[in-house]
Length: 356
Ligand SMILES: [Zn+2]
Image (cartoon, rainbow, N blue to C red):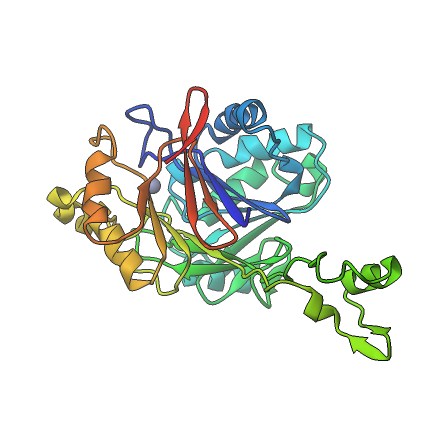
């Protein structure tokens, strides 16, 4: 497994057609981040973890969580944060947790100056952060270090601490970056790229060497053998290249300016409602595919469907006419980027997952 995304909600704006609002959990080899956390997120996570244990034979270890990344402040993406923060405390969490999301430059200015009031949209994350803190989302109350960070696309500000030099990187072995998108309030697409890793140690190549030498080579140490220097790097297979995944949040089409292996993009509407998508700065399924082409995404996964869409058949058809590798997510699906860059789409069923 290179990167695996557990998609826990694919509905836009409100629960509809059996779908829940936004929230996804990304597992890398070294940790977990959650991207968006709408109403009822933790309930869905409980069910999903149970299904993983029963049908996939492994546990999602929530203790490995290091950050909640929010794409924007609309409540269908954020209303599940506060109760989940409290549950993490009940579960005995001790490690630092970052909550990171976008705001406007005016808000960052006001935070830096420490006075005055920026004109703020009621959905702006700064209001929600303040409210959550008032309701007890603090390090003192919860017993683990909680760090609230806001960004405006240029600057990062941590509440109670001040301006940061850069975006915190709480996920080991991976790089997180934020990319401003076009929505009705400040919004980010989040990109997570895991680093290249050494190739596997090739046991066969070293089979004739004494055990001690093999251990050294496997640990990256060059060794002397029969008057020759054996280089540790020659005993490894090709390096395993890192992969990247972007989760778009809500956005008009073609607003993402960076490439990736897998793009998870909102597809609120179909082309028949393109005008509505434009008016509300959302995308159609075709628009998501045009974005994927423009940002050279190898694979596209659709999500965030309007309540008027009964299922995602038409969305999938529309996007597939534009991009060669498209899947449509349902609630509980898993998307896995394999070591070789191929995509596995595991579709949730009542009895586990079927690979499509
Ligand atoms: Zn939304």
